[in-house]
Picture 1 (cartoon, rainbow, N blue to C red):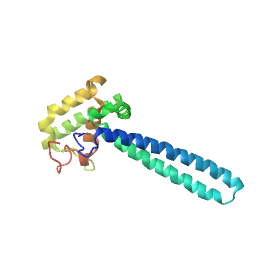
Picture 2 (picture 1 turned 30 degrees about the vertical axis):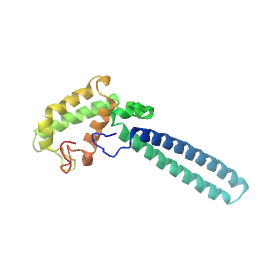
Picture 3 (picture 1 turned 30 degrees about the horizontal axis):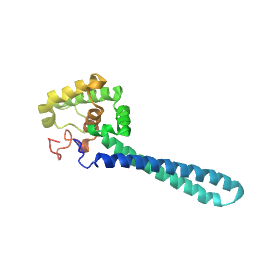
Picture 4 (picture 1 turned 180 degrees about the vertical axis):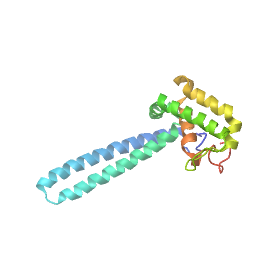
Length: 186
């Protein structure tokens, strides 16, 4: 399974299994943290200093659950860029939550602003990443067509397209629009 921007995706079957495993791990670690926290409170009144060990265990379980949640969210974020991954229910739900009307409108405004900025010279603040004019201007019509699709009917543009547009506009290090070290055809 390949995305336009990320060539290191696992096969869909493996990704689905990873999402399920990470969900299970999250649930187990949060449950362990809750049990250890309850035991720590009980131990505080009954067993003296043992509550400290139990509280540290609860915090460790909570920390590992947080790490697991982050790993799952990272995988979901990557998979939302791949249209075929939407067969997985978790990806489909995440993509629908991501591709909101407000986000689509902001991306369309960003695309139009990027094209406008590439056509004008100067006037860009020095602290922002600037789109590469030689990559934007030849693709002006295509970029504006994407902006129009983002502004259009929600069914006209798949959530994966919204996720890819978001990544192209908000992550300059991985966007060929901003990063001259990347090939133009990505």
